[in-house]
Length: 203
Image (cartoon, rainbow, N blue to C red):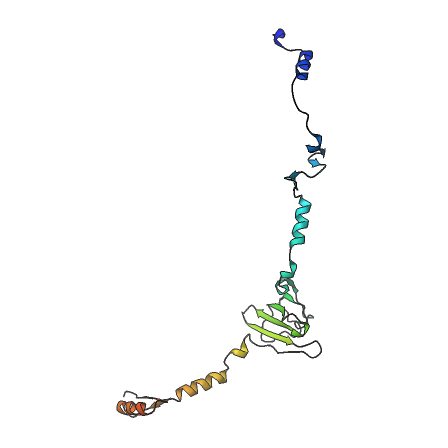
């Protein structure tokens, strides 16, 4: 009913009698536009991170000096490139053989150039692995004017036994085996000659 509805004047009168504390304008975030604060809000006196802060911070904190440059992919080589004149990095060959590319490898390969040591005189390694899983390495050592390349070789080839080494080892080992005329003869000779091994062949 109309007599139960408060008039505007009555509402204003009662509102004026309400106890409330006005907001501190310095503690209110103001919008200059839709979802656009005039100042960056803080939490415990610490500014909130904006998208600009985040992107800038990540770029600043990235320690690029800790990245091994040899793992950075560079480009696919052409036949005009020289595998012994490349900067440190990883390269690829696709159906072409650049200059100084080893003849023993096929033309689909990965070329990895690494610096050796931390001085210019220390040189660098060029390692090429083709799609047949064959691998050759060439090492440059010395200064730019006096250094030289080792030549293409199998990795760790200096510590691997050569064919001659294997043949010599077999000959040396088998030379100690001497056939005796009988089992008794083998036992007698083995007792007196400990440097050789005597054996018999059953007939």
